[in-house]
Length: 102
Image (cartoon, rainbow, N blue to C red; front, side, top):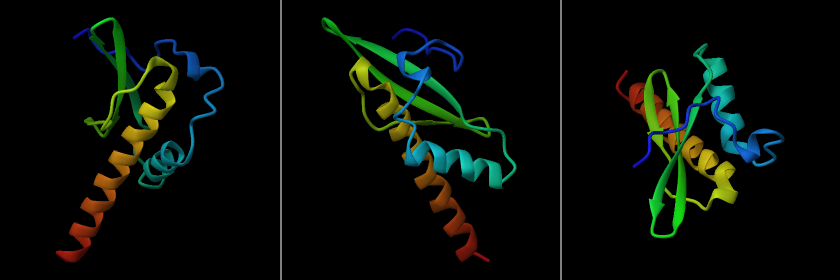
């Protein structure tokens, strides 16, 4: 598998990124409220037969969280949205577990 592209690598959706919706914004807000560094996005690709599948990871506090699914290259924003949703789910799960143990 090729190495992941860094967060500064050019992507078609980065210019206007209209797909940056609910989950990505919620994750950025969560990190800001916690006074953490902003999420770092990585786009990864996997050559599958004659096509390439794309996915995303988001790094929060040095911990990478992967999207659940692989996408066509036209839907990279959806891959980031998927990774953000997974990350928020894990963060909220850990927060509720910590609250219950107190």
